[in-house]
Image 1 (cartoon, helix red, strand yellow):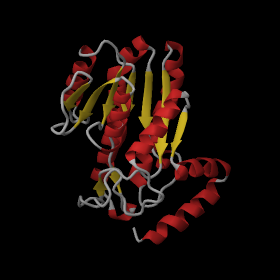
Image 2 (cartoon, rainbow, N blue to C red):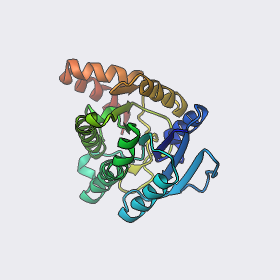
Image 3 (cartoon, rainbow, N blue to C red):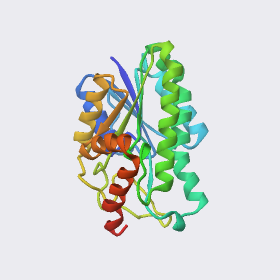
Length: 254
């Protein structure tokens, strides 16, 4: 039985990916801060872990590796957003967004590098439209996702000789936590909670699109109509894309 490790696997998109993979016959290891709502079953192993804590990440990774015959897929899904203007943000919150969205994924990749090589498996990074294009009131978030994409695109070349595939999925707006934006004083919030989302899709629909792209070995998987349009428009004319993004996002009152 193949095993997938999913960070941020206790809810939202991570949980949708977990269920979809289990339906395909996969075993899943789910890493998240709070896994109390998840059951330990033969095909599911929840592990509580703060990915930004090196000791916790090392312990959780080792448990995932030793409990599995192989690690065939690692999905880097854990993340946080920040919705506010740069002039209202501070250095601490900016670094925190990077710690969760970028550095935790990098160190997780380091922990699973050899097991994924051994299985000739796949690293799948969950990025965002903000990973390849600008997004209003998301300076820290967009920067962290740009960094995430840069890392995994570069890792792709290094791991190719080991028979490892590195893929990136870029959702637009996935309604994983609707109505929960701006819960923190620094503007950070759980992903999928933005009030200015457009053409939102369900976590289940997003997971289906991502796994379909995984099956087809697509290196970049735009997830959703807005993501697909943004991907092509930004490649063809970045200036025009930015104008259209500003027209749609700046009028939202965010």
